[in-house]
Amino acid sequence: MLNPLKEKSEQELWKQYKKAKDPKIRDFFVKQYAPLVKYVAGKVAIGMPHNVEFDDLVGFGVFGLFDAIEKFDPEKHVKFKTYAVTRIRGAIFDELRAIDWVPRSVRQKSRQLEETVRHLESQLGRVATDKEIAKAMDMSTGDFQKMILKISGTSILSLNDVWNTGEENDKISIVDSIESPTSLNPDTIVEKEEVKRVIIEAIQELPEKEKKVLVLYYYEDLTLKEIGEVLAVTESRISQLHTKAIMRLRTKLTSIKKGIF
Image 1 (cartoon, rainbow, N blue to C red):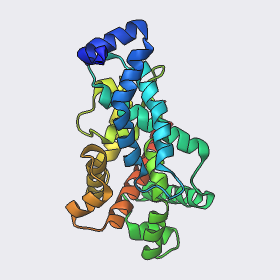
Image 2 (image 1 turned 30 degrees about the vertical axis):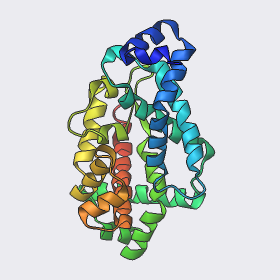
Image 3 (image 1 turned 135 degrees about the vertical axis):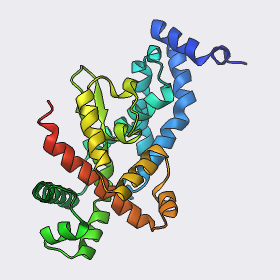
Image 4 (image 1 turned 45 degrees about the horizontal axis):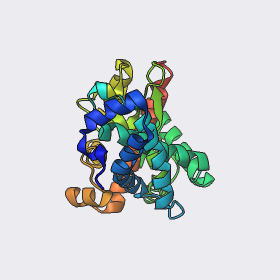
């Protein structure tokens, strides 16, 4: 038996759902976009510790899909898929934060690193090198690189920290800006121009290799392994570059965040 909903355009279904909130239409959308949840969960799973189960990530993401369906506004002329990815990813990270999966020792190292970089770069007035950061932390460059790999999982969560834009229920995450660093979608980022300017500026000031890793990972949708092949370096090196890029972003944004709001 044919599903009559399949004979209607998606735009028609959205209009109908917004008016009547028909659960049959909602279930239709859930089924249609279920593969998107698995796709986003798969991206998040890369680099996560073994104790984080893929099926759990998918389960968390389903909540984000439901949220996206309820809050999506077809009048804003944004593709639902684009809108849903942010909601799904956000729901996954919200749940990961709630269960606090990052070991305390790793979290402490991450905070120590961010504080060191914040202090060092404010003194230098420029991006600090690995050697300078390692020296400030009283460790060898090799030990510093090992530490970066150890805390790489926390950088993925950090990237999805959100900033309020000043409007009720309107938020922007760092990752939303990385996904399109030169031409942000106003429907996604909303109206807070100062927030957008600060985040874009912070991204543009990253060392070239770190910025390239972020764009390839979040915008071009490549895996860390694929980025390693593109840049002719190992996957672990890409993981280090990714972690340092996010750490620098968080350091810079945290130091100026209080001055914006």
